[in-house]
Image (cartoon, rainbow, N blue to C red; front, side, top):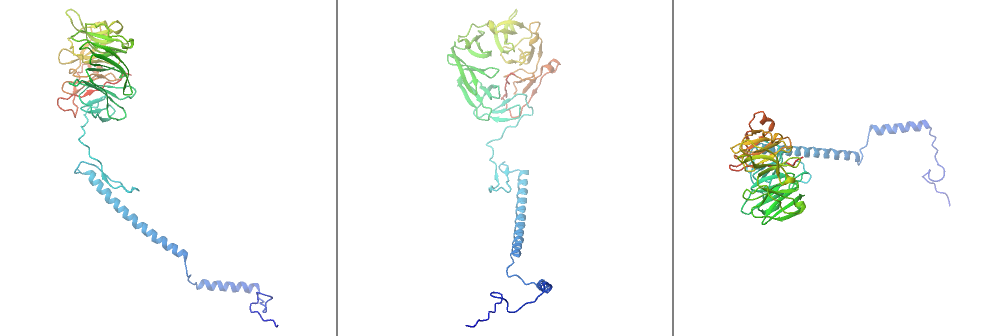
Length: 421
């Protein structure tokens, strides 16, 4: 067989035609080919980069238009919200506008309050005040006392433990509430009691219920370690001297002590004691006794270890026997009522050597509470707040009444007694 010539020279065997091309000629031919291609470029059938750029431009335009639309909507919403906030609304509610919330919340009005909130008075007291069914604290907090009414006295509980509130006497008896410090609703500790008294330190409570006297400690809004003793008709607790309960006998029968820690019954009454106002830091009781010739009410320091025997007595102007008044935390001052229509400030440091008394403004008509800075706050018969500062009274200044807003005619706010430091 004869060999057939193969046109594909460079596949098998050696090339039939020689190509004597030098390196310079090859380089020159390559340069010419490249130059021709650059001069007359051919369009690509597919251009990925161009397509990507076009898509990016279209996306950018869409985002720009969307942003402009959102900005216009936000401007309209803000303008509308400002107009509603600036002018009166039909139902008194305040609209809330939420812009750009990812969860899609829409604007909705806040719920309207059930009733108007009484306005605060122009005077901020150094102590808490109870006005109607509202508690206004000295720190500016305002709380509604749900279910509380007819308040007569109130006492702060130590260690930020809330408040103890006692009602006035009603046909159903007296009620004692504990107001928690966390904002919860008041809780009833006692209901239907004949008489209730809270210690000035806020740690003890004594009450009468039926034929018995009770006393207990107050811890976390609970009455603990209670004691009970039988008591004649008309006997009522009126205060504390340490852990002992001070008991008023009926028909001006004097005051006795119930040392419940000893597990005994109330001791014999000192018939000369007409009222008690509190205790001194050393434990002596400040009271009103019948003394002198002729007999008249006088301020006295009583020894609780000797059945309230007077150790110092001071007689001066005629004094009222209503028992309204209180002793300052440092034991220096006593604010009480004179027999006339005014209050008196008594300097207990000079008691016994001609007690120094000073007119101290309108008569006391309710509870008296002393601040830690040494001022006494009380409410007069008109419902106004009276602030008594001993230094100003000694300088000849007569305390005046400060009117409180939100107090209805015939109602009196109650000053909350602070705990003694």
